[in-house]
Image (cartoon, rainbow, N blue to C red; front, top):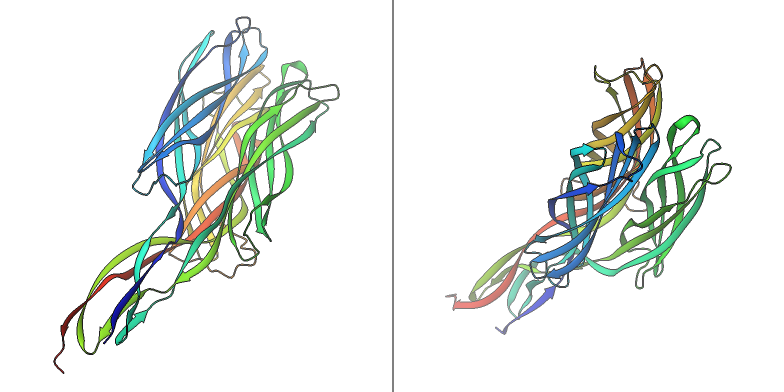
Length: 455
């Protein structure tokens, strides 16, 4: 018998959520001296987190918290404050190596007002930071045992990164409302609705959604949603129509101009689209061996990884109602709906759909005519919805082994007053899901020849 074992190293790439953590951001906001704070109507936040340094077992990040405060001064005038705070922290994880390229996402869980006076506001915000990354697994396995060694093999499919890159572009548009006389504030979010691979390119289409708050006559104001669709071709060498693509979009900057005559407001945003493309391959490890003439000593080793299957997109609606507390005046007119955000607690596959659970949070500013007062109300709507998702040309069927990385953006919010003390809220939401399938394989890491058998 010619005992000559041969080994191979297979390197599957997994897209995983490696870490989730929280950081507390505290800040002090000071208004203009000639516009002291009489009443705070809303506090809106959003965050941006980017990687800083990556070491073995550690990934550091830096982020910025953006605050937007809408308030009324002691003369009844509307005012808007913008304030930014930088923060930083790190994640520790065994799966982090120096070559890891993390993908950070973040959102504000809650903002507490520590204190407020005519001359300052002290705030504390709990920010949840999530880190996804492509993790490479090196699987050393037996591929053949040589002459006279009988083997049993098992084909295992895996994903391999073809391309990972970021493309930046600028969107601009004009928002027009004849009633607008002064820009107060604006919020923006972006979401992708499709990512289609082609030859050395990925075509990403989506929408930039802005929520614009502007003042009207008589010291009143209102918010309206404005959507700007976009299509961006991202160069991706090595990609073809059979590639599996994960794409995401972030807002790098968002600028709102002053309101001009006729109620025209200019909007400009710089967006970053990141594309990670995977090829689908397979390796064939030996999982069992036998020899007629000799005992064999096999040393097994187990490996866990995941295979990226597809990215899914979908839209749905969250509905609910909120009642005014007894100490609040009745609502006659909704003036603003801002600070809209979605916190997803979990997403899981269920047949041909994905079940998403989470909470929608917002702030409603309304007007009471009897007291001539502007009032604010916090909204929190828990939801659990089942979303039918579009999988393009893929024939893959969702199953219990799926790992799902979700993201979501608010596309529109509409409200309706009922009986003055109850407000119906309807939220249109866009979702994106990265679907992977968990794999577990036990391979033969090392094979040795034992004693000769007595025939």
